[in-house]
Image: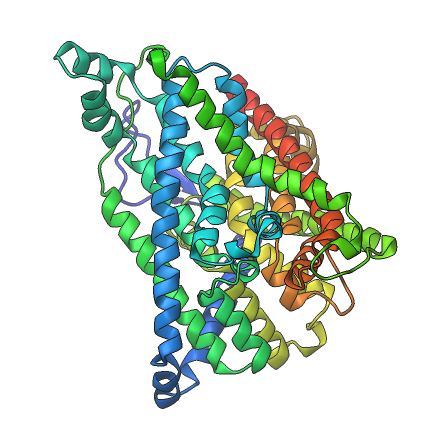
Length: 537
């Protein structure tokens, strides 16, 4: 394998006569990584092409309608409101769990993370089935906030656990009270985690479709779907999608500007000390009551309403409907099958790019990585719509076929898999592979006997994460699923849209159970991955 001298690097300190060299990546590996990046870029570029093909006059006529202004206000209002509410709830929940002597804090920590396994459209189904009066802004804000606040809670809780307690001790020794310590010391240190979580919430809210459709709250995503349904494969949906895409890019830029370039890592090299914990005093039981109330509204109500409708006859709902056992079995089989197949394909696509980033880092690898992560900031409905239009125009044999649906899943969730696969490969130290090669093992046996045992839990975590996302995915499935193919998610959406709440209950129950089981497996695999990382270090 050829080697090139890495330009711009100083010689190694240990030996002034030794120049660090950088291995050139194999062409096959670079090509495989490029395929992953191009798959993500293709629908985004096609969306821009379709929007540009509409013409300036048609674009002005479409975008300057009063409806677009209403959609802009609605989308901005729900995004800002839900992001702020999630930031407040997530930060408060993390603070009391990580920094106080809260009774049952480990249990509450699990309950605060659990809503991530409950799809937002399933929560919408549960709340709407209680009262149709929730089909407005207040109902949308309630459901979306309860579904997305864990995206703030998890990173903020992790930041609080890793924060150096010496900073707070110094502030307390200088006379600062608890409130001053929190606002002047702790909160500034939480900025990266807090802004990162708020970014995820904002992008998730702007991308949300199923919940808003059930709650009858009109946003850009619901209008994009309506444009697609009323005028198939025209430029209108692409133009509206470009407006939503621009909003997502503005949010990304705003988060980068607010976060700034400050660095927050620990500089001490000593053993990690336990974080400070404060006594709650008279506030102990009111805080516990708050966590119980939060658990009830996030998990108790959805699970309770699903259980309630499971005990009702189909005629008990607003719209009578019966559940077909065969359809229930087919929908479950389709959801699990799609999830497993998409998980395998997505992890395989992520592997060459992750290996390139870990073993052969450089500008090309970084550029490909950033291209893939564009999918994380683009609404799934926009990507799905672009794939539909692209298939109709250039890939007609693949339209409404299983292959195209799996490719769409891979594009949507490739960033999630890439993070876990890259972290797993970093645990497999190159010197162990070199040792195996020196003992006579070829590349294939080295992979299965050395790399896979070390990185296997990380690969499994990536597959589990993709599986959960695919099982609960709605946008691409509605647009790209083969004819007469049903999944648990699409059946919940279909029955709830017609107010057949009792008919939707079995599908919602199975979907929730599968999601929670897969989430439990994910946590186990992540724990094993962390154990391997600790052992290797």
